[in-house]
Length: 565
Image 1 (tube, rainbow, N blue to C red):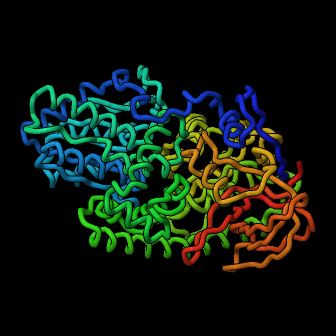
Image 2: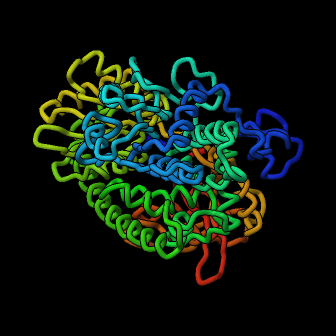
Image 3: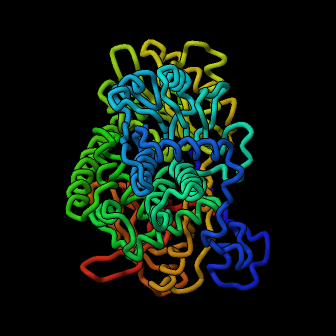
């Protein structure tokens, strides 16, 4: 794999030469008005297809004391969506609200017929899916045949057929004119709750002032960032308002506890802290045990209970990391052992499998290997004697969910089931089909990707021609929220390496100085387990503040070493 650095170019003159204005300009924000992330600028809900129908169904369920069951997903988006629906419905007066999360290892994803059978113990009158449901044709049909009304709320791309639910709220379904196609599942749930509050208000349901749904934006921010959906302006508004509430201390005890065990001061929280601090700990529950642990943390109503749950999640996350390290090493050995045999024509789409791999961690391993080799990767684990479950990650240029759809169409029976997004997908196959699928996936990847697509391009915001002070770092990190589709600033520069050492067996700790400056800076390159041999390498880095024993200092997070400009 080759790596090449390119610098973002300013298409329009931002009007001033400040670093922040340049960063905004290359991301399409060229006016002060464009920077306005107030809640009043959110897309209006009226164009969300079926939103009114779903809100009326929910309003009737609330006012008639019907039994409502929320069926969520086992990732952070599903957990925050579930907690949001349960907590908000209760605050609006619903007295019979429960939730059910499918067991990743027993049932898999979505509202399957097996989950409908399990849900029968709650005797639900109304079943609401969050962050799932668009592929649950059989499950929805079974629930409705038993007299249960079903509302599907989801954001995943629909297949050729959609479930015959009583209402479907999904900005990506056919015929939906809502402009915010990048909503996460928790964002869709938030819009539905907003419509529900309006309906209940019109019915004069509330004895006093209706609950303020802005108080739930901490959950919306966490779920949106964790699901790595594109941060278009609408999502940035939701995330920014959620971050603002967390920083001011107006967030639920569970999120504050998750940040604390991650070593983050909630008063200084950024979208990066949600992505790499709170989200992995929440996801650990769904990866190793059951996401109910994470949901109970989010629903905890006092700090002591929340911290106890957060500590358990932190423990699970440490266990997950240990499993991941071993699996990544096994993947590396697999690649190293076979790569040289096909070095003249290595696979473009790579499938990896080990009989001892953990189902809940294969997605992380696929992501790490994808980042290392810059090509689509699917990692498989054994689900039973004859079934494998895979988690895939892709690179720009290949929509992995559509690629799997093409494979399913051309090779009927090769894939049992699949679903996902452009950059991430999950699937199940028969164990006996692994070799054939490996071959077909590589062929399909070659159809999507050219040699240029396999060259890793590092996109930089250029050099910083001033001292990197704490004030500058704060200005940049707080100017987001940064994330998918609105990338956190990445800079590059040539540095002298003054000191370097490996820490934690897999990270490179550095002390560097710009070649044209005098400022000495601390830096760290995560998962870079070898010393830099070049005396004056060009580094691609992000800005960070390291806090140690109450003292803050500038730290560069190195993303790439010795790159070519």
